[in-house]
Length: 254
Figure 1 (spheres, rainbow, N blue to C red):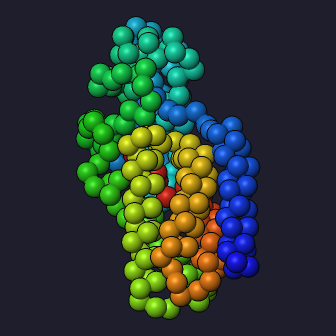
Figure 2 (figure 1 turned 120 degrees about the horizontal axis):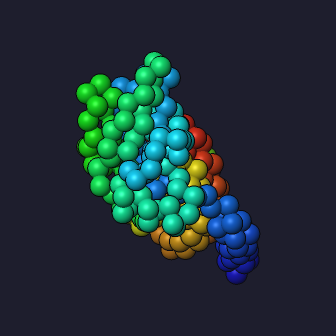
């Protein structure tokens, strides 16, 4: 009975932690871009702007540039729905500036009233391709999952789990949880702005703490229930911190 009391106290602490984080996470949600341009072989001084097809270059909107590891991305944030509607109906041109030159290219026809349109621009031959490069998301998800599993495996060891059965429970649970998380990020939320994913990570981290704690109470018998819950809390907080760090340094799956 004493052991169960301790276990449920820790689970309640996880619930309270999630209750505090969830509103803060939702309040911190950042605007998402209407267009992300991934650039292959960009020169260091490259800047991109977008202008309406029915307007002039004087009214061009600068794209926000980010450089993460091997990837350079530019994001277009249209200020209001009226501008999105105008861009959709008239189309847009991309102003490419580098080395003192400005080149003007017509963008593929897009629905700017939706978020997270993605195109790839090859600077070398000045061609556009709809969507991100093939295999990009798979690679980025694989790197994130591998790093998260490595970190949580070290925490699992630190909590004293050694038996093969415990490790099978850990691997199956975490592979399903990580798969669900990235399916949510990519296909449901379409989070492409680097820090736009952080609120989702916070909320998902809370849900995973509770879900994993309940699974571990049932399935992990090598240690006390209280230790299983403590592992769920600590490993997910560590994973959340790692996720935020990876958001700063790794490109986001699109």
